[in-house]
Length: 299
Image 1 (cartoon, helix red, strand yellow):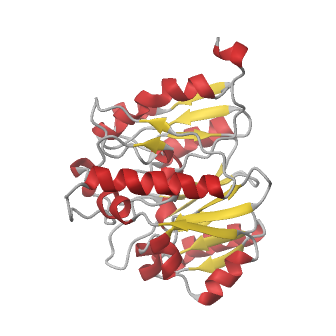
Image 2 (cartoon, helix red, strand yellow):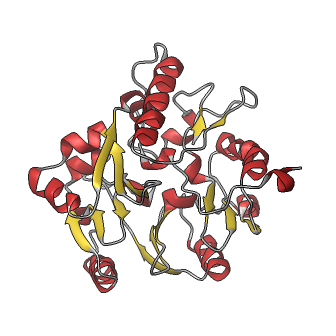
């Protein structure tokens, strides 16, 4: 997780992110840091091993709090760096050297060269990964390009489940991880956002064939970031489903019961971050599957 130093509304991303709102601007950075720190403490209190990397003031990166868009870590020891649409978001990769000092990566695949071709794939925002079954669900958008996905799949061994999705106003949804989240035995998804019958069927069948119970959410719940969840495992092996307070409060009792069969639900208030950044809990966490470097490796 990346602790922000200059968080705020990003004009460069606002055009394609309908979740982002240029609202109350008073003390946004201070409020965001309070929300960030409280979120980290809640995760740690639930047994999650959290590595916090501090952002730098220069160059200015207002969205650095959302690292899952530019980096992903994988069980085979590989790391992927992704091409970002907004120029100021490309600068977020500046903290990668700090990350490399902590974790032992066997292989780094840098896809950022696609930026020169105006083709983008924004990490696990664009790709919702079923890691066990090596499936990458991808809502195609200006930030999620099929050619870059094909390169990711070639390097990683994943297969793509591509589709198109729009919000209730017909606007293309910019990131897959705002409409769906995949756990080991369940999937939370706004099926109403996939209007094409064939594509909706493709997604549902892929989820069902891989043994997922589908927990459907509405447009209103999607807008409350109920699709932006992440399943984590605590140090004791407990399964946790992490989300914002806004997302949790939008869930109905039956949905909560369905999810609690598989995970303990963990939530934290992220109102300032959600409003100004257009992202939520899942976007703030880049899950790591790499070993920590030993003292001799660091030396």
